Image (cartoon, rainbow, N blue to C red; front, side, top):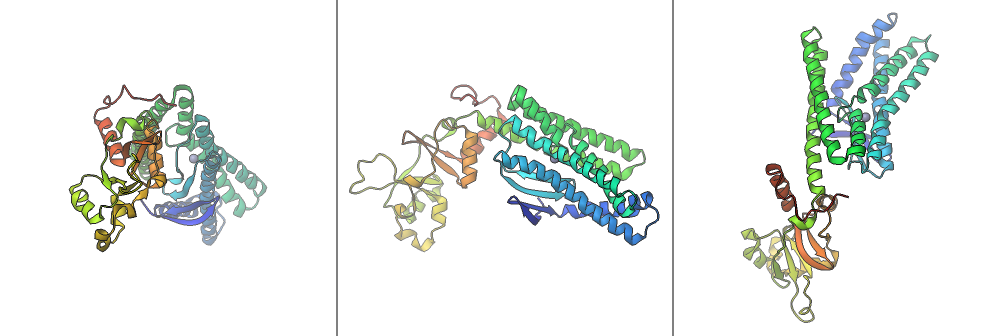
Amino acid sequence: MNQSVQVFKIWGIPVGYNSTWYLIFGLITWTLATGYMPSEYPDLSTAQYWIMALITSIFFFGSVIFHELAHAFYALRDGIKVNRITLFIFGGVAELDDEPKTPASEFKIAIAGPISSAIAAGVFYIIYLIGQSNPLIAAPAGYLANINLLLALFNLIPGFPLDGGRVLRAAVWYFKGYAKATKTAAITGQIVAYGFMGFGVFRMFTGDFFNGLWLIFIGWFLNNAATMHGQQADIKVALDNVPVSRIMRPSWLTIDGNLPISKLVDQHVIKGDSRYYFVKNSGYGYEDADQPHGMLTVTDISSLAQQAWSITPAKQIMTVWEQLVTIGPSVPLLDAVRQMDERNINQMPVVEEGNLVGVLTRENILHYIRMKADNPDMGTGTGQVAPA
Ligand SMILES: [Zn+2]
């Protein structure tokens, strides 16, 4: 993806643009300065057209940010982190860290965008009415009123990922459940996307080449987003219905705490036995304990200088048991994935009533997702927990 440039921060959210935005900013300014402004207000100078065009463009993208901030405001209110707001070639996007938890939350976050654009349209229309006699005010304000209204209406088209598609998804979610909602969102999103592309082709061949091409691009972008979302949602549904205990590894390797790292590497790590080892400290006071005393990962080993491997016992660089992030066997996989992502870890000991019963790793989860993709019916049945 394009690296985005941060311009400012609001409510802790970085707001910026990526390099594709220059293109649309330039195109809109140019169209305004050479097309819209001169045809609406013929008596001004070229310099005045360009200055008005530039100011109008800035306010236009300000309006887009306003729209995205409305989404962000309701996301934050519902406890969803907003990673960034970015302007790009097709407008703006507020990137949420997570999906809304309920249909009501999804509805509020989605509808806030078009409503804010409608409000902006109203405000610019009032400015237009007040400043009607002065073309330097009326021209930009009139354009901004129209474009914001258009922004509100365009975003209400019910094809995911447009806001209207999210509103529709919230409604289906509320009445028919999450799995059905994401399916509907993906399908309507693709229908709308192909609609754009079809209409674009039609326009291209009926004399409006560039607008046609533009519509095809928008359709292509929407189709990608809808398809990707559909795949993510499938994974989410698959992971949400399965408890950790179904796919965790029920066995693990235990090593002695006094084993030097060099020996551990020679005997196990280099052979690819495992990427993590449970460590038991032998010696006085330790014999009774059934529990491992800590865990050692390949990452721990690689952060130790190689010269020190032969003189460092495993117990010295292990994470002690009390500090390990563990998970219960009945937790849905989706929550497990979230915790792994948040804490940036690759494996979690599965613990039931204080006892180690298995290990869940990222490889486990990836393997499961791949297996599910190849054989959708495999692994359903016994052991499933009811979705909450
Ligand atoms: Zn929106």
